[in-house]
Length: 99
Image 1 (cartoon, rainbow, N blue to C red):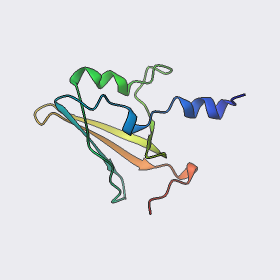
Image 2: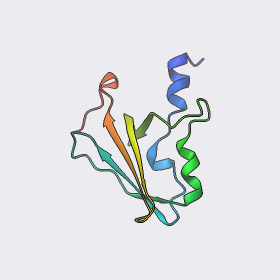
Image 3: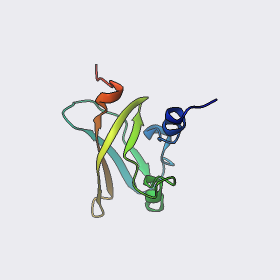
Image 4: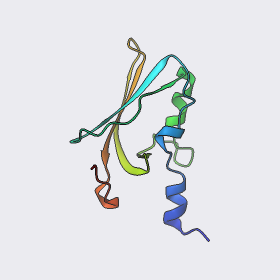
């Protein structure tokens, strides 16, 4: 049986599985106070709605990056460059560390 914490973590998306990986928009991630890098993806403009958590109706505040839980503190959309930038920091409460 799943407890409340496990159910909540199941609804947090994994970045690498999140977007269709096709489309005109590039998706990049920048980590605060870290030089960590993760693959740049692509998405179609109509996938922007995937950033909304259906359980809350608000933007996802957390996301997994290679199984590391991170807090999302900003989403930036640059229409001219066709670029979505996700700004994240490693969640200290879950002891996510970059090696």
